[in-house]
Length: 389
Image (cartoon, rainbow, N blue to C red):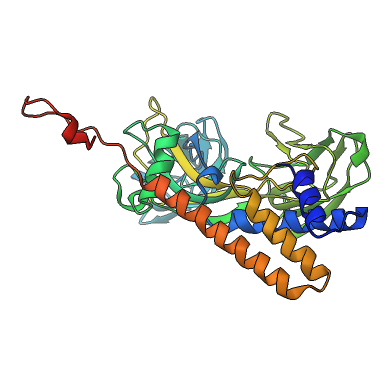
């Protein structure tokens, strides 16, 4: 049933068919829809997304191979090559030799180890090796997830539906299975790409022009200080501030989607749905990164709960099948409370809670079923009795 169908049915039940009552009833249905979806891990709210573990791209270690000799002052450390930029380090000397190298900036976008050279200091012979060959220990998850439930390398090549069933039947398997990646959820991000510059917003519907978007994050020139900027939406608008990190993006409900992209790199982009007021990308930190191999990218399979798609328009349907009666009884109870019929309202709410428990039980029973085919190891052949029919 659509939002309008449910609201019309409820309003006829309570004999309140005026436009104001229908509008209020729709508000009740929307709120209860979100509450029901949030109340459990429904099978239809779970999704699996495959992604590739990103390369770290930063300098992680410098190994001093040879301290050289004859140094009277600390030589300058220079990094060249490797495809990235921004790495920097200082050196220390003792007894005429380089004794220590301190990384002051890890740089970014390195796809291979840069070459290290030493200059100045009146000495010679110092050599060192840079290490950048590791996978990133942090990653931004796909846009559709509200909660990250499990991460696996899926070396058994299970189908997405099989991974969801595995999680529903035994969630602990994602903590103990050898294929599972151990992780923790860290602060979310407002965007799904690295930013070092301005942000551009493109409206898909002229009716949204004039609505405001708020950016909260760190400026490129003032990192570690939280800043805020508000931009007014138009067909295309660019932030006046240059950002190095965006922690949060928020907007008014829009008629159409908004495209968000990095001004300097338009390929870094995502589409912000009209019904989503806050843009939020979940981020995780991995504890057991696999050994890096440039020829073999590491695929991760993320199991998570999807963001709620609210019943905004009149023709939207519930995100979970089989809960229409639950929403009808909840909304009927709210409409009766609105009419000060508290006793009848309480009965409707009790009925709604009972129906929701039935839906949960059905969900659990269906998820608990496993089909297992056991080979006939002895070659004796099976009969109907072996299968219970």
